[in-house]
Length: 133
Image 1 (cartoon, rainbow, N blue to C red):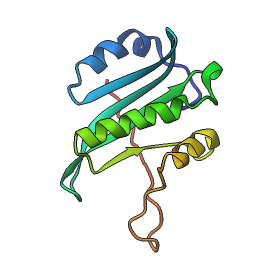
Image 2: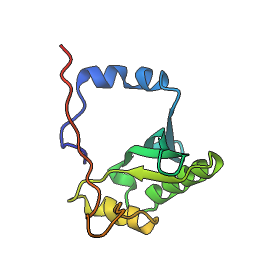
Image 3: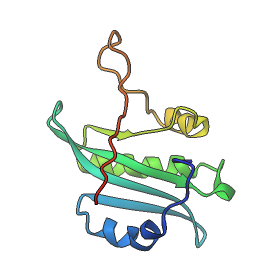
């Protein structure tokens, strides 16, 4: 779903090599028989509030023909297992407000919108693009 645009040719050509350079990144590929069915890209992070590591799920995708058979739940369960091994305090991810199938999958697995104080509302994920010239 993402931004609705396909990856640039630069990204397609360099993504695997660039991710491999990141010592705090890991990816999981789920196969059905010998066919790739799903992918999760994760990054290790740190919670200053808990003074413990965390894992951020940056990308999660299940190919169309494999949706609805529990692939996302299997991949999320594996990320949870890794987070427990690393003694993480939490797993974070972002999801588009209109991506209801993904939201349902995350809710089913125990994720919820992040909120410290109900009076202040739920946390928002913001970004600022950096143009490198």
